[in-house]
Length: 297
Length: 284
Image 1 (tube, chains in turn yellow, cyan):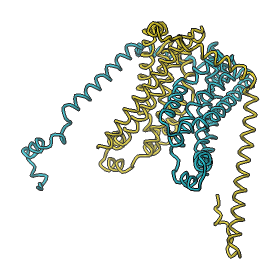
Image 2 (image 1 turned 30 degrees about the vertical axis):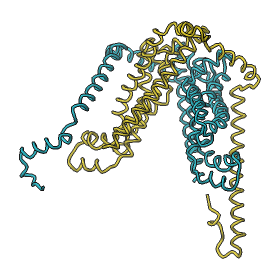
Image 3 (image 1 turned 180 degrees about the vertical axis):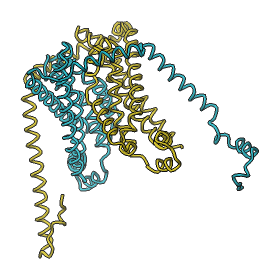
Image 4 (image 1 turned 90 degrees about the vertical axis):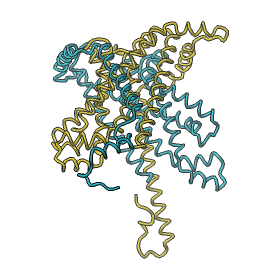
């Protein structure tokens, strides 16, 4: 964008007036741009309202039903009989905790598998490390497809290949993790300091040695931090994979919502939210510790 | 003390080892700790392998099944339903767009309440932030399922699910953007004698608006991805058609839908990236 003093013509008589004129011109241009943006936005909004069949009346009619639903979700807890009420609310706690553990293990194992694949593929997906262009190209496209198909779609297909149960869910999560982390890892690889690479090459190291001694030590902290973050995301996703029958606590939640067992729904929801928040906070703690260690070195 | 490299003897090394043990190996406590960590990790992996029945035989079995499915997907054919698929994709985009707009509109005022530099009362923004955490902690699919029960099948449930979960995410991102504003402009407006509202209007909003728009665009991008699967629980969009095709084993049509999803996601990613670059660039 041109600044006012760039536009002031040389040798004009009154620089103040010229500046003001240029400034007004600039403001006008900006206003036109904003108007165009607002116009496009309103057009998009109208189109979205039409194709999305957005109906404010249905929404208003649905609003009391939504609040009613949320009210029904709240369990009956009386202060005098708190213990008994709570144990009635969580009558199936043993099974739910078991399912929660399965969900967490699924997320853990899928993150592990996906990250290993992402780690191995990330080096050939970095333009500074892989000079053979077609290998770079194929790896990049492969990772792109792996992360662009939603994980639930993978789960839906894998349920047919591997049968109902956690295995299909783990593989779906792992593939998605491979694609998403692989891209991020490759970007980290592309931003490393090239000097150690040259050092290893000058000392006669081959490609594998170059990766091992020049790249990995530089990128490992960033990889670890990304992996923790991916684990947090995978815990959330693992909790809903059960909707398509791919294991975890999701199936239990799905059936309870379908069958309108309100107390069970809120109990399971609370377990999931608590687990997600706990995992987020502990990953944050681990990340801080790792960063602290890096600074100490 | 200087030593030539060929004059170093074992005695030198030994004395160095004694005086500086940590330079040669990590202390015992740390070694034991990392050893325990790796053992627990290994045990967990083995437990997972056993529990989830991860045998090579089973993996191979599934892979051959998957190969069969992939073969059935080619050549992809819409079976004359291309118009239907295309409209469903448009509906998906509309859901993502409206959901993001509604979520941003709700998140905008809330984020000011949650920013530490606007409302200094500690318990107030602590409470409101935990509320956002709950909104975010429940996945958008779960919200969709709840709204389908509450307001019925169709895209409206999906729009509301996206709007609610976006409210949580965007409020958090917006309030962080507000907390990171440059103090100088705020103080300048305050020094000119402005009221609290005017400080926010002229000191804070011009700084945060481009950042907020760029966050909203980013969420639109991510919501487009989620909107494609919301149909699995009946909340509108392409997901319902895809789930139907997969459940009835019409793999060639499923392949067309998956390709359509891929193209849409790429297109939206590209557009949103360009727009975001433009927005952030205009602030400089």
